[in-house]
Image: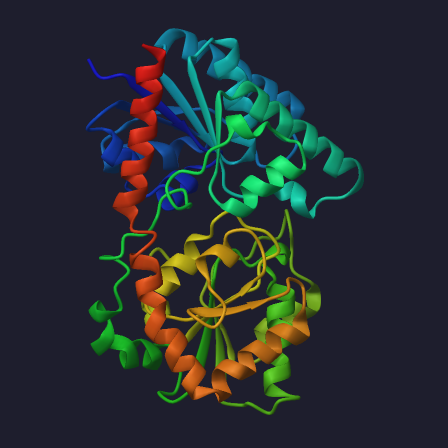
Length: 387
């Protein structure tokens, strides 16, 4: 009988997008059970991908009473199912899942760190988030930062001892399917996609993919793009925003939303199941996020042959090598962002060099199968140790 492997995320979208294909791969070696909130979406996901699911309601906010209920439900489930490995992702799933697994005496309690909200927090909120993160790592038997930057931050902040930490492979939680993100599939359709978006064939198009929230740098991005139009007088560039607005946790400034709505050169298409057509229609990724773990978007864009402008933050500054496959700017710096965008438009030689390197920098380091194999080897090593 295969050992039981439980994977937990706060919401099913993380299972679907951030860990796409990984749980199905692991089913050849484990009895995989996925746990998350949102019963309907979770059941559909499990049915479509052929793995078991178990519903536990979790929130992304600080909700102590709800969290205690989730903790107790998970504890009872672990005692009943007796999994060999419990592996959590995302902050809320991490603290609730690791604590429940510790109480249930699960031998392998693993947590992946793919970004830390506490990096942008201050005051009492920062202290609370620090405490919760330390507690999560204490209950875990192993902690996997998905980038060198996160590893160094965790050690520097004394959140966990170095011997408990490990980076799987070259970094990333799931790598990239470079056969799926392949620009050659879309070469003949590029102009068609542009026509559907009312983008002229000769316009330089910047694309952003992700949640349209403050800590993704959208306020600065919209302001920087407006500078291109007004101060730098570059009128034929476009900004393509691919992702949902989130009005609760980290809403955009009112003036940013107004600019998105009123600037004809900014095209917002909302959430999209398949982002490849939008990469194919674009010339460069612009991703001025404040904090990341190891962003899939930068790898996806690179695999699609796009150079990137990214912030000098964890993950981004590992995927992008300055003047090789992209440009790196200071976070929260509108002026530097505008200048980098202008440079890509005006310096054709630089742009072509970055573009020619973009795909190979991803395929050589972050192919998805390499990440899966490295994680499987880690699981098997842990099982051997426990024997």
